[in-house]
Length: 521
Ligand SMILES: Nc1nc2c(ncn2[C@@H]2O[C@H](COP(=O)(O)OP(=O)(O)OP(=O)(O)O)[C@@H](O)[C@H]2O)c(=O)[nH]1
Ligand SMILES: [Mg+2]
Image (cartoon, rainbow, N blue to C red; front, side, top):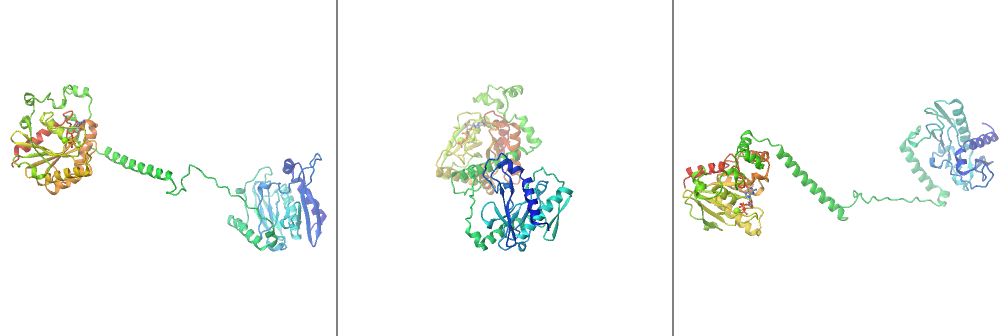
């Protein structure tokens, strides 16, 4: 072992060499201020002179040196070597038993090539005065050896002597100017978990030491930063924001469901027969120029029906004789007991309110104004019976679903309609009107299942086809045909009409006139 004076000299030299940064910051030099051997231990004082290079007094800051890079020691591993100045840092821990019991919290920071040996004993108290046990002294010696060895040889693996225990620590290329962050640290025999352990060990040690208890403990203030826009930790019943979020989410979900329904609808491939029917009858939204090119008079109220007005002479143009007859209202019923005698075959028009039932009667017979219509749902509130000549009766039913009427009144209409379609003996066909835009709704399904049960023949008629594109008319027809394929009472195919443009009306007349021709009461 080198003489005490030699070591003191070397350590002092190292402290001065390493002091570049501190000097810049504080204007003072760190050095071994004092040392003495006391009771087999070397006591050293490390600090800065109060004078800078110009000779002016400055306040010494003992712990300022590389303060950011402190590594806390613990009770067991009470000496830490820190290598700095190359692109890795080396930590060496010393066993607890190598230290005197009252010298447990010693740390040595060794700064690699520009090694800074710092040994301090918190127990010693005063700033600047550090005591070093003999073993600690050896550590300093080893540190000096290590630093010199590294500088001189520049080896790729370095050896640290620590009380006869040699440890090899792999080292990448030495670069004393490069700063090293903690992630680059290679620690032999000390994993992250053991690092954590050192902290807890330190705590337990603190608990044992009476001297440590005497010292006031510094509590770090925990700063909690709250992000005002982050509602992830908010309780649901905390306020309005989560509720609003929930509502928005619900809306989004509903929108997604709606979107997926739309996507499903757009994926429907109509059959060639439906597509050709749509084109032949000029169904769907069409531009006037298109109708003109096809030979229709766009000045007429329902140009595609090609019949200008509703005078009897003009009605002679209707292909089907039965629809040339005058349409006459003869009975209205609010209850089943008010139904007229079932003398004529009846064709009824059912569907949701405002779907266009009454308008269809007018369009079929070309007699505008006989059946009252309105854009306000719920106009027709009774079952209205109309004679068409002496061979057929057309029945206008009240609508179901949304209507401007009281719930109990609407329920009564619905019950009346259900009773009529399921019990009326003279009823030969129910035209179930479906708005092309909206398709079949749950109330429609209710009526369909009722007609299936009562084996009432029904015909699906898509209305208001002029409000959607031709392809969507075809898709809707295809969709309904597909969904109702299995129903026995359904009369195929699905009809498509527009009372406004007159599209498909002639085809519907043809279908219905056959019923009148062959039906027997
Ligand atoms: N664009 C368009 N509008 C139509 C068509 N058929 C009917 N309408 C309109 O739809 C509205 C309702 O027509 P109505 O015939 O009264 O309907 P409804 O099914 O009898 O209604 P309720 O009697 O309330 O059940 C009216 O404003 C009509 O002008 C159509 O083919 N195309
Ligand atoms: Mg009506």
